[in-house]
Image (cartoon, rainbow, N blue to C red; front, side, top):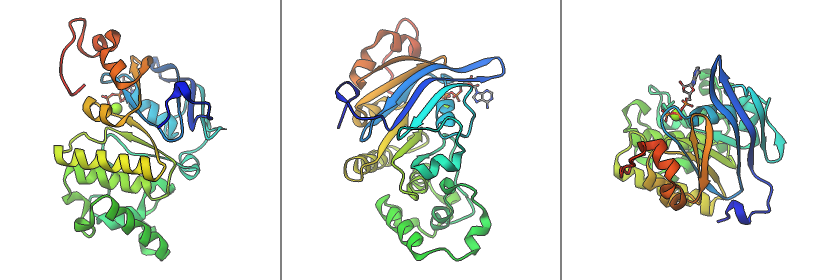
Length: 262
Ligand SMILES: Nc1ncnc2c1ncn2[C@@H]1O[C@H](COP(=O)(O)OP(=O)(O)OP(=O)(O)O)[C@@H](O)[C@H]1O
Ligand SMILES: [Mg+2]
């Protein structure tokens, strides 16, 4: 795995001076960052620090107020969500977005990552190759037993896995995961971790992960960015970040703390 300091490659994803204002509220101010091919990078920060807003800007579901974003060297600052999805950038959502009344397989086939998703698509013929791909991914994510189960009956962890599966359908190069362990039991957290590692190491997928579970970050990420009040507070290895006094103060106040779940 590569780290930025030794990396002479072009970043897969790069933000320059990214800012987002909601009226008078500065959700992001002048954020610079780069994610290189093959990395698993963590994005952490206290509640309300702008993490999800950054994902919304990168996946283009929110406009960017100032600054620029590049994906594979192309300026995507003004592209539409379906355009960046087609370029190979996928994401999941902090608040799970699956169709509860549809089965796991139907959710996969409808994956909105293609953009312009309509329920009518389910009633049109779709290529066998799409269904084959859906089954392969379902198998990879250990969801075979629930393939025909309605998504609403899945556990929190199974829903998170399904969302990852939906994100994988278009075979993206970069996957942004927003709190993939939130609402997930410890066993399935291990499954999610293991699947991310496998996707990274054997399927060439690059990840940017928003997480509050610092153990998960430590196990998976080579680098971590920290946001605080919409600005980049720090950047480094998980170890460096955990020992960074400014980061500890941002999370726990000046007297620090020892909670695993940041
Ligand atoms: N659509 C919106 N309209 C107005 N304000 C928003 C909007 N989305 C986010 N914000 C504000 O922007 C700031 C950053 O929110 P964001 O959801 O990005 O934080 P976060 O780091 O993801 O937090 P959490 O860890 O709680 O998920 C907050 O003050 C939030 O209230
Ligand atoms: Mg968030």
